[in-house]
Length: 330
Image (cartoon, rainbow, N blue to C red; front, side, top):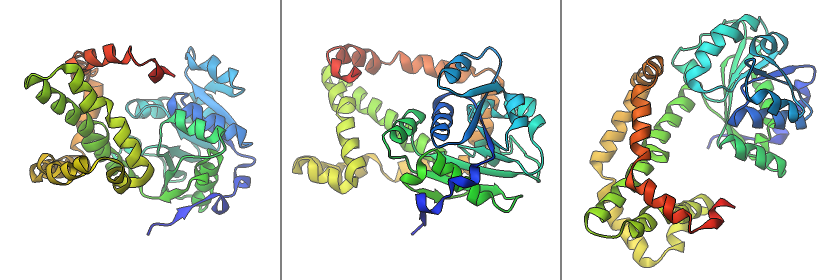
């Protein structure tokens, strides 16, 4: 079993006297900075001049400066801008403020693992990756609990990177739930694999395939929506609460039998072979190169895919049905 680290394994005092620069104030940036501030840390947010987030961060009681300014001032610089912009932000602004003895931290390993950012050898390079969106990280912290996280050490120039990273994880509330040590490679590759084959790509494709199959067979789109999309939350919540066993205990015997006997016909050996191929493309950098080039070209394929998916019948049907369910907005 992997070791899980909790509050007692981390010392917040190690962050005293250190300024932490949070680069970006989006989903993760706002949560990390506010949680750290409430943990008693010295936090400064780095943004470009004219950013819409500048005043929002200041209204939350945070100091704000340009990315270049805060990178020079801080001892710990945390890259929380989107993956596709990190390289540009680092080399245009952050790199100028990086000096020996500092720590460069990430919440996802993409840019380090795929060598989009190559830091100098005389700094610590680390990661703390909460396993939830930023809004949930902030909410859980505010409620007195926390979200689990992964942490990793890519470079330990100071000899104390591990202790500082655990202190940081405590500062954002993650050691309340537990943090697990990993590597940049493992975090990046498993994260991309999960997103592509299950959490985003796999689930959405399965939902659409089921919806389309029922509609093509003559069933009402509204009924197909309820059966293939709406009820998914019930099942996922049961799995989240108690694993596959609790979900199977909670549904009917008919549903459970169908799970055992028909599920493997949908997710069969051909699907597993495709999963292995997708994993291989993640491991050898094929996906990373494709995504990097897509961004450099201005995202033409990405934007076309967005438009196509937004026009799918399931989205139109869903909008109408959700209007009948005002509780979803609460």
